[in-house]
Length: 303
Image (cartoon, rainbow, N blue to C red; front, top):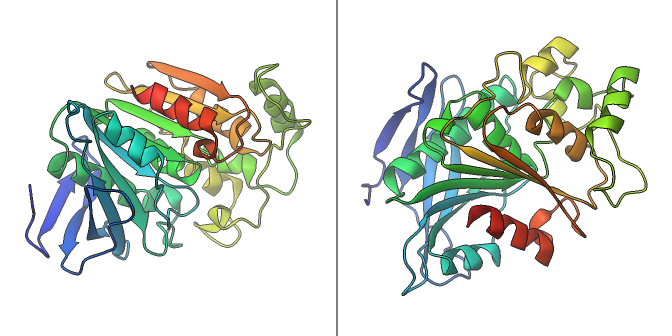
């Protein structure tokens, strides 16, 4: 379905939380290296947040392959970059429509916290489902910051109503900001951090447990947030939804990822009460798709 330029679509989460709106912009964007790919520029708006631009590269399934559904990809950090090939190529070859998103300037804007700002991803995900997805499985996968977007979409915005499968990779590293955004881990978290990672799955000499206080994700609510504010802004906040009867969640962690995303991400993964899988990928660092093992793990989870 092709929307007219500058048409605004208002969305609803369908469970009491209002999402934002999406407006298609007329100027073209670069389609990228993959064949059968077009690029569209969208303006995504959410209540009490300034509108920001997203570019989406839409790659059609390979010719002669039965259509299997849609996969939305999310790069890490603030999501400024496209996820890119070869994963796009491999998913298209499997028969999936691939939607690769990049936020112009990133999705975090210091406007009240990550939880509030994650409305943008939930809104875009819903627009893709409603206007590009034509049947089959609807899947979202994202690495690091991209996995955080998926986490908020499930715990906060009710997007389990539209997702058949979620594949968060390397996180979410901000599942519990109150534990990660500290100068030194509390004794309780240090002990839990050591215990939450299963023995024998990691290839690290030591596992980091905290992000520190200087990282920008720790200061979205305020320059000096309280522990209570950090907990409220986390993926696993006090009101987080942790059961998704319609959505399987397949968590992937790199066995060579020695940072805090593994133990902090497990603080979310271990609390999901519906169907899930937790997998540690050998010879793979934080950037899961950077190794053949990591890419194969993502593809296997989606098949």
